[in-house]
Image (cartoon, rainbow, N blue to C red; front, side):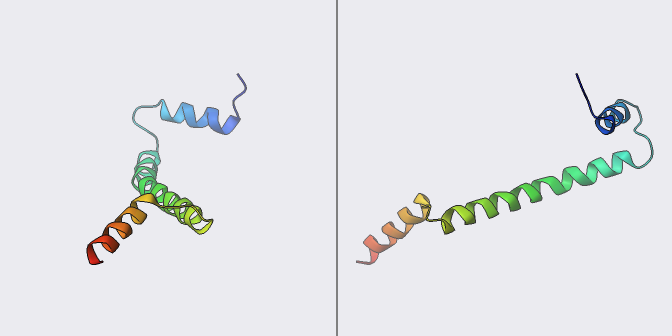
Length: 71
């Protein structure tokens, strides 16, 4: 298997106990930031889908329900 030197080094670092230097703190920072970044990417993707003419069926259903109750 051909693994890049950076990946090989990272795998060796992660195999150490305890993690050297500030590696543990950097990993924790990535873990706490990742969910928000993922949510932002999903939101951007969804907004792009709607802007491209896609339909959000839940919003349409809620809108239709509101229109039938006010009519």
